[in-house]
Amino acid sequence: MARTKAGSAKSKTGKTGKGKRQDRSDTSRGVLARWLDKASWRRWVIRLALAFLLVPPFLTVVYAVVPPVSTLMLARYAQLLWVDRQWRSLEEISPHLVRSVITSEDSGYCDHGGVDWSALQKQVDVLLNEGEAPRGASTLTMQTAKNLYLWGGRSYLRKGLELPLALMIDGILTKRRIMEIYLNIAEWGEGIFGAEAASQAWFGKPAKDLTRTQAARLATALPNPLGRNPAKPSQGHRKLSSTNLSRVKGAGPIFGCVLGS
Image 1 (cartoon, helix red, strand yellow):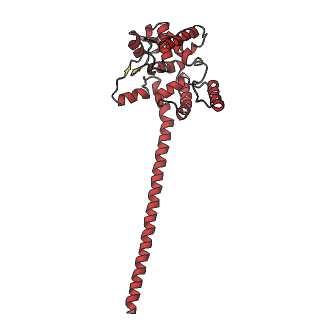
Image 2 (spheres, one colour; image 1 turned 90 degrees about the vertical axis):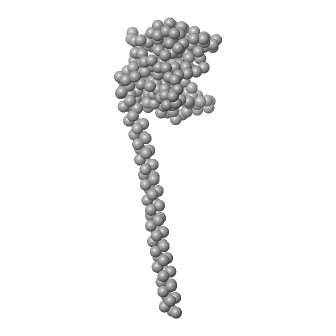
Image 3 (spheres, helix red, strand yellow; image 1 turned 180 degrees about the vertical axis):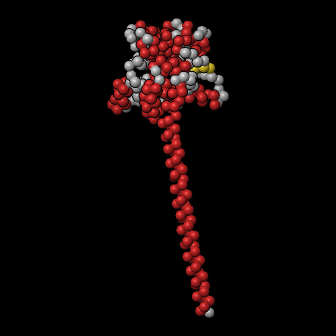
């Protein structure tokens, strides 16, 4: 009888010890699985960071000779939506449009290195002192960076990403090439991208034949391309284009990096 109890106790003890070892093994496997999950997550984060750091410079070098498309164009292609973009060299685009766009969007285009730090500082001061969201201070190079690599809408994250991308683009491409790319990927209506498509859609003529007035209307439509009709401008749009024409006439030598002296 005593032996039976002892054997029973020994059996229980053995099962208990085995159970503890099993628990430890399960715990170890759980810790290992969590560590592997974290390691996998870290690898993906590193890969994404490397992609962000390496892909834009590589593509920018390619875009020095290859006509690029914007992220908005790619999104429309992915949704099987209509896209009209007809690439044209800068020589095939009216210099009136170049002057109007620089005057309207970035009068210091030829002087800064991709980012207008003084204008940006003013917007930061407005944010800190008045609490208003920053507006303006976006150079043509920053807009090109956004169109090529980022997304639409306003956010501090996107604006922060625009800065290094704009500096990188300005360091790799010439001012003429940046302007050429910008004028070929800018949105000028639903599915309408680039100066040639815009000129054909709104005025029924090639971009090289745009008049001063037509160029001013296209340039002043850029901040709101889906809400402004260059062919039939509203009263407010007419005032903006008229102001643009006056500013172009008095702009002075601010177009030299694109159009020459």
